[in-house]
Image 1 (tube, rainbow, N blue to C red):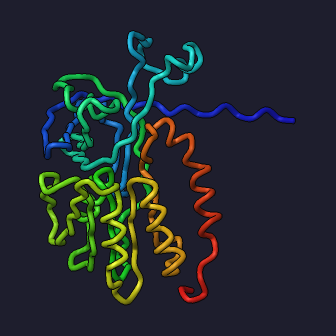
Image 2: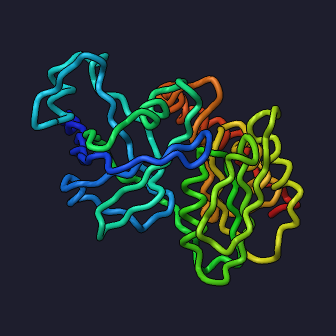
Length: 282
């Protein structure tokens, strides 16, 4: 039996923090730049994402920074951990990468980091990944998500073809979390208040009178409401899988490490539960 080839460890990009900005009470912007971004490219997808690398506390890694070497020489608990964030904007001429972070006080890892990080700090990350961009051939577009999907939805709205027919829904905690987006589309802002995450969003999308023609849909955010909306789109309405970008960015009760570990099984379960499209919808 031939040996399985070693898994390739991607080379991280490096950048420096250029500036930060508090956009809303719970959204912090961090702009990265520097010569380390000379090899970075993005722009084919509006849901491009990068994986920021956070080193273990008190651990010094050898230079030049090499993930393969770190994984070979350091115990697993000392490996850098990753946190995934959407590319809000990439300016190749200025060589600036903009990332927006949801911040809930001192909860989590990346949010508190984004709140306190200072210009000049070194940042390492992997990527970009991503697969969605608005299809100019679609008759209309549906965009729906919570705060975690807002950067990708905003990027998609700003990349829409002129005159595109778009229905965009974003659920946030309250009016103060609404953002200005450089788009002619009127976003429906849904204020969660004390309701569970996604409840208002699911209700709004279900109440929508779907236009005629082929829809291209982007639905992302907390896994439970994404599952509900996937059922609506795939099972009840029979929209082809290839016209949908639907995924849980996060899940209540899980940090990113736990969610990423559980996500393949979750997705498989959802697929199995929703694999049969109802005859009425087909």
